[in-house]
Image (tube, rainbow, N blue to C red; front, top):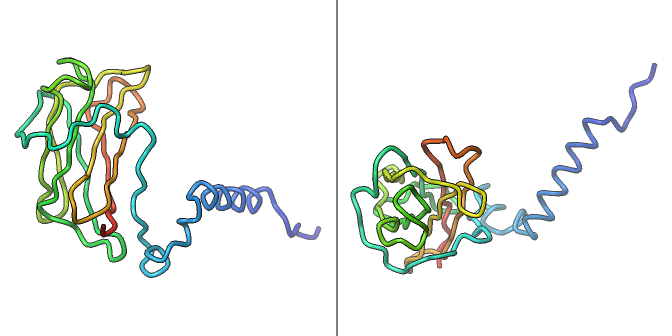
Length: 164
């Protein structure tokens, strides 16, 4: 029996790659990606909801839940230290607009950040956090990672920043 040229697996792989290219709106072939393989993070829809510029630096925003991730430079992927990341969410202490649920942290030498908060709760049916980079050195990025379950005790968001 002759092996077919076009298999189900090759169709699914091709369809997936085509979808990524369409959803990326052409950024799949952006200059930064072509040069290094690491494209900048795009802002997520709804990421800027209830944003407050210049949220204060905080040690923590509650107990028992962790928001964490990394910040790297587009192009070479180098970790970015001392980058300010703003975090806010609806928690057991109040909604996304509550001042006690807004704060900023700095990345460490390895580009990592983490902030302990109160448990994030569903807002509009989905438990999610909001994170932002909005300083002058790189392009602004707003993220809104959704947690698979309200029982999760952490959420991760990684930034790849392009120069402003």
